[in-house]
Every structure is written in structure tokens, then in C-alpha cells.
View 1 (cartoon, helix red, strand yellow):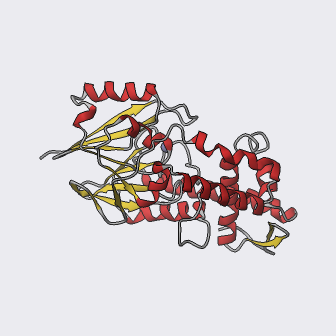
View 2 (cartoon, helix red, strand yellow):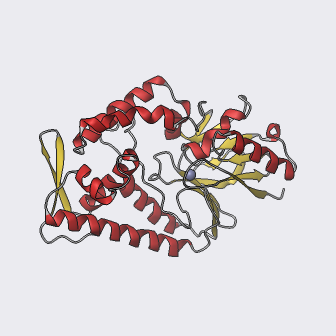
View 3 (cartoon, helix red, strand yellow):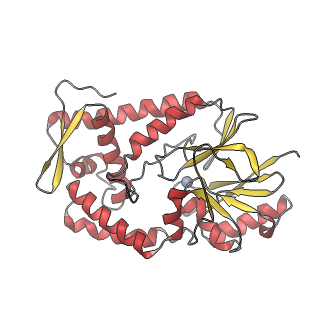
Length: 323
Ligand SMILES: [Zn+2]
């Protein structure tokens, strides 16, 4: 049977603006991503669904590209019986159980202290619950991983693309090179590599920016004709976009390396210099971005860190250039 992919666009209360969802009509009806939990998004979703001839009760399954609120929130408006499928690393975020909130809190307290953040700023951490108010609160019913096919859609393959989120996956249709890319490749913005706590059994924290760059390079292994993105228009020239993202990344890291060539810094000191106007208001976001640059430089051998008291101090390696 002929397959059809519809795009549904709903508003979000976030600076990113609208978010895209995709409805794949094959033998069954699959919704890829599920907007944000606001009444506006829900009404807009229902209206667009009606225009293409469906009701929420017609949806057979929902698959998510990653766990961020603007991609899962509407799940709370959809029937409890609906199968919800995503990478297993998304489950703790959509489930939102108490043990995870506590683990999250403990990890970030330790992490931020090691970054040289003053204890005064740690109050910001209790805001996780608030920041998840636009997300859903229901567990995944099935999980997917690298190389799997989407249930009921055998030619759509799962590719793991950690970076923007540890749970991030994209879906690649082998028959024509179409991709549903979540937030991995966006035309006008570079997705933030968000820090997350490690998973049980992992000894070290993730390095989201290093992972993101590797996930960008991984895209070169596929013949991609176009990407249906999570925000904004489709991406058609994928290799040009990857080049542009990697080049900008090198430029940002060079800026940080220049600061470290002047004198050693903690992560927080770098963060304050990079984001003087917003670091207090957006501590998690700006610290994720900053540690990303430092992980990247460290990975390339351009900087090294040493522990002084409770925190790390980063310094430039003699004669280093980045990447
Ligand atoms: Zn998004």
C-alpha cells in the first residue's frame, strides 16, 4: 500500500517556536513525536488531524525521536492504551518517577560544584520538575535501538544519534533516502548538546557535544535525500549543513581555547565570559554548552584539566590548536 507522510505543526511556549510532528499513513497510522503539553498545541493538533481526515483515536502508535518536552507533551492528551515507542534512554524522562528526580539532583549538584559553580546557584537545580511541566508523564511501552525497524513500518530504520539528547534517534527510509530527523539536523539553528546524568552502569557523565559531532559525521554513511525536521523546514543539502555545523563548532571552540591560552579557567568562569547576560537565568543550558566546548577541546588534545579542591581547572596544552 502507498505510504503517505503528513506534517503537523503546533506552537510551543519555547524560544524555538513551532514544533513539527509527522503522521505516517501506511498499513497503520503512526505519529512521530507528540508536540508540547499545552491546550493551544492540543487544539491545533486535533484541527490539523481532522483536516487530513483523522481523529486522535485513529492513531495506532506514537514513536518519539527524543524525550524533550516539545516532542512528547501531547502524549498526556492521547489515550492511555496507545503504544508509545522510543529509545530506552527516553523512558526515565517521560516516566518522571521520584527516583529519577533525586538522581538528577544529586548528579547536577556534584557536576556543577566540579565546574566551579558557587553553591548559591545550586538552588536553580530544583527547577527540573517545573521545566518538565510541558512534558508527558507516562512510560514507554516498547523501546527501539540502532538498526531496528519501526514497528509496522519495516523500511523505516532506526539510527541512534545521541548529542542533543542521550535518547535521540532518527528514522531513515531506505527506499528513497527520506529521513525524519527530530532535532538532530535543523536548518536554522544548532541544537544544544544538553548535559544529562549518566545511566546506571555508566561510570562517567556523557559528553554531549563530542557525541553530537560524532552523530553528525555518522550521517555521512547514509544517502539522505531530505530530512523532515523537528523545527522549521526540510533540510535538502545534508552534507553542506553538516560541514557548516562542524565549522561553526570549531570556531566556537577556538574562542574558548583563546581564553584558556590567557590563563587557566574553571568551566563556570568560561561560562560567565561566554554568556554574561544569560548564564544566571539559563544556568543548565549555558553550562551544558560550555562543558561541551571543553570536552571537545579535551578530546582533541588542546586542553587538559586538573582537579583543585572540589573543582576542575582547565588549561591550554602548549602549542595547541583545536581540531
Ligand atoms: Zn525540539
